[in-house]
Image (cartoon, rainbow, N blue to C red):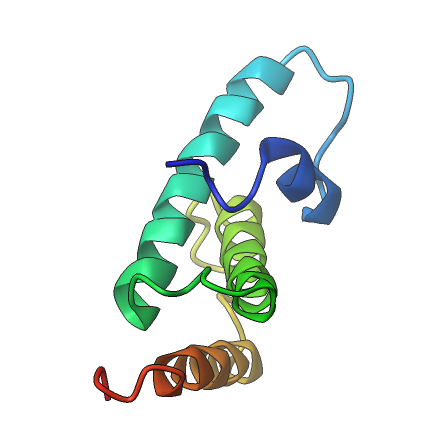
Length: 107
């Protein structure tokens, strides 16, 4: 199954990605792992139809990019750094609910 996002799409979204670094290959492998985890999360949360239409794909990509960006920025597990804000969390939960409501048999 082809992933919904590519490493290049994620690199364009992440705010602190350092292009041209010798660690690019290592970072790309880490980003591929985050893409897989984020897509699995969206699929588990929303159901297998999370990418049935272009509108659902765009919503799912937004959720994935937001999750990946948060995970990337906090990959050092520094406890002093605030995690995803409540506003971000509520926004993603709202989008997930919207996707779920697209298939009433799930709710």
